[in-house]
Length: 402
Image (tube, rainbow, N blue to C red):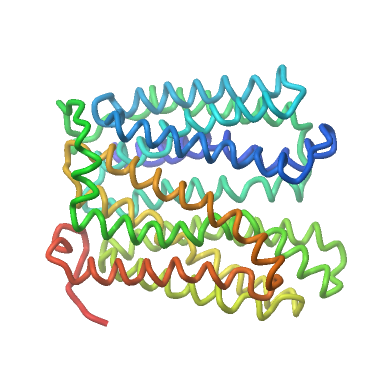
């Protein structure tokens, strides 16, 4: 039963999050059709992110994933998100209404991603890292999808928005009909405004959150700008049709992270989450520092290094969330996961905007280097967690030093 739920929930998560990923695919078209400037076009993505941050923050403060059944919360929010997103494809002809609806879409997505992780945690205990890894892997593949659409071509933007909304409606139905509460589900949680404060005061939860913030400092800035970086590099190296090859390489760079999430989850369940996250951040942080040295050089070498980067940059993601499910109050796992997600995505709003500034100041050769600060601090946090008394609560941990 749990393996059927694993497949169904991962599929529902992927379909529901297409609402977010669709913005990346339609932005170039809307820039031309609506005559958008650079700031307006960037807000098509940023508005969803802001809505998601606000939605997760409200959800955490109100304990919604714990006082409500997370399956019903997931299904309802996937439905409402589909309505907000679909309205753009059906009725909208200007940027400002579109931004408002994209913001609402982000708010509703706050009820899709974190509750999905909580549902998965109710089904898996020994293999929880792998299970949540599959969920994050599905999200990762969805993040890569717009780059593939650019390669193969796709429908007009209005049809694409409606497709994304239909996917989210299907996600709602899957969650209602095929996903059940697991044997590790808790019941009877009541609203308690002090839960978020207690979560932040918990030393183990706090260290896992610091590790996650270090990971997020790097991840979404790279996912946002890797396509442009590759395009500029391929153009400099005189590669034929750099736009096509940059889109394909970007899809592969982000998409391979889905495999990284699953493999890291399997290894973390066996050998411990702190070690896996430390190794992942050490490799991805090293890529931040070194990737620019290959800018404008051999495109095959650069792409190969990007694939390594893409594998490790998100491999650790699910293990921070899995650690939270093991370290927090069982009655309020959903609230603690949602709080973690809110803080992490709030931080990405900063780093996504910083990369263009670094490009202007130091060029693409060193633009990603400052992102290595996140993994460095994340490693420190997870090393401290590894050597704290709370580590015994984390699945698969073997008290080894390296």
